[in-house]
Length: 332
Ligand code: ATP
Ligand code: LTN
Image 1 (tube, rainbow, N blue to C red):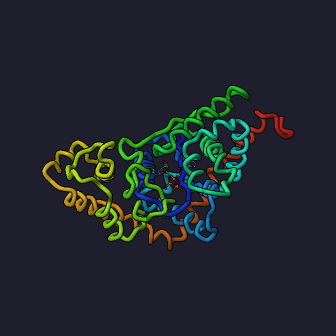
Image 2 (image 1 turned 180 degrees about the vertical axis):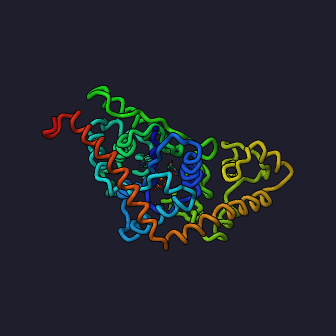
Image 3 (image 1 turned 90 degrees about the horizontal axis):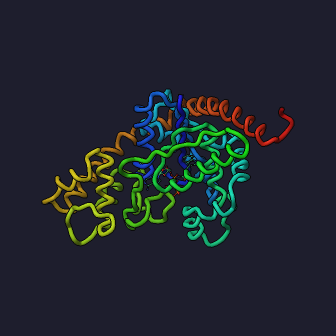
């Protein structure tokens, strides 16, 4: 049986970008890959690479757990768990830091971007974060890792580290493959469409949250930045705003970009945005209804307990093997 692993940081509430780039893929793969065991977690250790409010972090962790299920993940098919509840992630993270070179960490573009956004107190873990991400994946011998485009470099590094460790200490880790969505691997900001939509952005108009009030979400689509040409044509370079909206439309409706261009060739931005706003509303409504019910349901905790136990068993065995390979402790 193959394995799939992926996680999302609880640094805020989930955006439409997280949904299209990650969550929606998890749900599709859960239904398509019948020979694959899935491990989906809340990457809370990754959240503290930047400052977090303690109470808010707690809320986000539970909220993301509920959103995973509200978006369609089936707790009977997927092992859902919280990263920090399995100490082996941090342990293998350290081993990965002892496999990676400082230069490799410093080259990561996400680190460079995030470093520039902060003026002081950049945490060491912001730099070493890809080692922990590699550990998250290698701990479970993942064959496939569904992620958005922004994680490409981290996944490449994970592959490098797995291969390096295997070469130095003997075959220990599976070298994983990334899996990107066909459309929507990088949803852009609604206010600055050259940048990625992200939950930790300062301007709330730049993103749509899965839990945004439906009218607020629709208004964010209506006021999204476009251009003055008023032709619905896909051209990321010249028309990043409308192209991004078309990508969102294509991802949520499973209609191709080409068909959207054809369908709206005599239309205008206002009509297109209105149709997209309706589509976004129809996507969010059922997710929100399930989410609110789940937040009151004690079975959410049971799901996380079960997921933790299954994950822990695998993680524990793997870690014992890794320490043995390294010659640590007294194990023969
Ligand atoms: P932060 O703002 O804290 O960096 P984020 O919104 O970028 O967070 P993550 O928790 O880092 O989200 O990402 C979770 C998953 O969602 C990853 O697989 C990531 O690639 C994907 N993802 C994040 N943003 C987008 C986006 N704009 N388009 C497509 N996929 C995305
Ligand atoms: N680094 C990712 C979140 C993440 C992840 C992982 C994704 C942490 N560990 C393991 C896939 C597999 C991010 O910032 N989006």
